[in-house]
Length: 431
Image 1 (cartoon, helix red, strand yellow):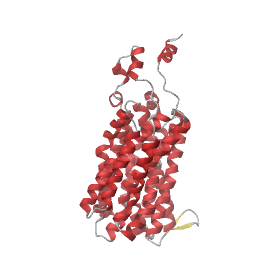
Image 2 (tube, one colour):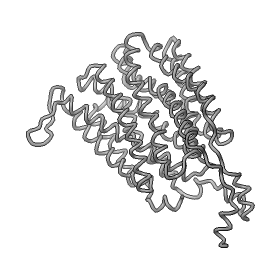
Image 3 (cartoon, helix red, strand yellow):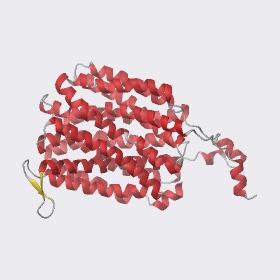
Image 4 (cartoon, one colour):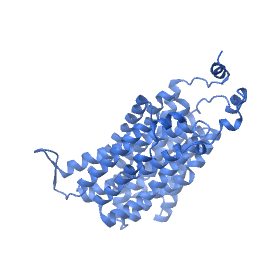
């Protein structure tokens, strides 16, 4: 018997998970993260109300919209470490319960400061599902289906934005800010209970230290910090930070751009933002399936980065036109600005959200089960730090130089990301 066969024979194996259980757990984790996303993104859809009727500047309203993301930043790694220690079930369920309590506080808040405090606390609590639901995917699904499963899991962000876009502006306009925040309150409360009942921690292999001892491998070798052994994870984190900028620019300021610059009415603009996010959700699945087919996460990630830069530049060109103008689309075809803006906004949004599942799957696979929670927490932390800056930062840029040039500046971020993405050969070396 060869040494390789002996090693395989000695290595403890995890029990094979039931496929039905894997999909059930994925569905609950997806629902929890959608609920948390609705809470985190709801303030962005209050910007038109706060800016046009309550007198806040775009930078001030953008700062309020960024507060939940700031809360996320402070707790993502801690939630991930807790998931590494006690498992995913109670981390997700407990975090959803705390988010629901924060949403209840935001509903009855009497001023912007008090509202901001509850938004911060709710964002900090909602980070639980971001950090732990990725571990669920890696634990329950085999490698050749993780791209698909993580793509489904990553639908949470655009679907959450879709729900917020469709419900929050109308409720806020008719019944006030507090009424609009009842939506995440109900969703988070329901999924806190559902996840406590239905989520099961994924089956795990026997302790790696025990496996190592039977093979004569030092314990330290099986728990090597992946951040010290390679720069691969650092580069993926950096790329994800850059690709977050167009994503959050479009989700945060897309509605106000469509209303104030393109000339859409609030209802139509809200529906369009929701449709764009919905289409983007399925774009994440397509990107995940593509990565399974090509056997790489980083190659499709590079394609997405290039497409995002091109899409933002095209959107900048449309933003430079005045309401009522048309766009020449080749030959005698002339497209009204409203139509061109709608189509390009949907395409740009779809492309801008397609990278998340690819990056998350790559991080989880390279980090390994012992570090997946912390690595995904670090991934989310980096992304939400960038997202927290996008609200006030891009808002101030738009106020200073307008939407067209702001979109050009945003397009630079995915362009810079392209050469930072690791090569596929480096990916193979790490897996």
